[in-house]
Amino acid sequence: MEPEEKRDFVTKVSEWTTPRRRTPQSQFKSVNSRFKSPIQSPNTSHCTGSVQPSLEEEIEELRRKKKELDSEIALLKNDGVGVQELEQHIDLLHEYNDIKDVGQTLLGKLAMLQGVTTRDLYSQFGLHLDD
Image 1 (cartoon, helix red, strand yellow):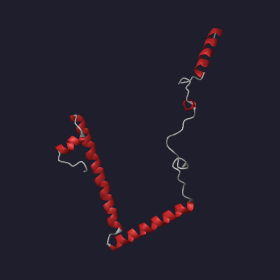
Image 2 (cartoon, rainbow, N blue to C red):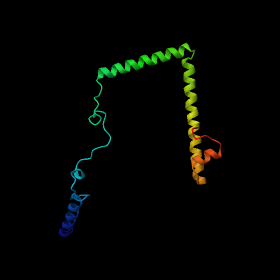
Image 3 (cartoon, rainbow, N blue to C red):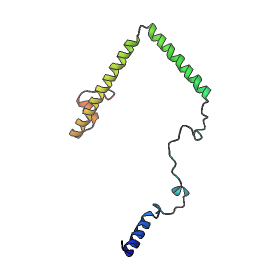
Image 4 (cartoon, one colour):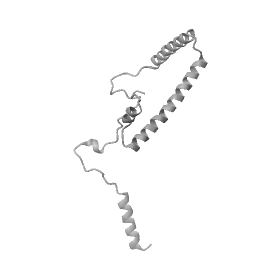
């Protein structure tokens, strides 16, 4: 590389590495400060003013929930509902939700093709909005 080319190259490289400000100097210091996420981490509760529960309180809350769930299970067993029946019911709910999702997708695509809203298609097909 010729000395002149080398000097031009070094100048260009130094221009690339020279830090530049994206915003002009502002009267507000926050413009040039570090980014602060609007989402608070679970460890910071200073904004809400609440004190995080201690580990013992969390354990006690979990024990209370377990007791409630055990009583619900006992009630279901007394009503004659078995685990097998509950699993089948849950499987059927999953299947229903999958079919409903496919229907919603088809209605959305049809509405887009016709240039109408899905609400218009609901009334056209005799469906209720809460279906």
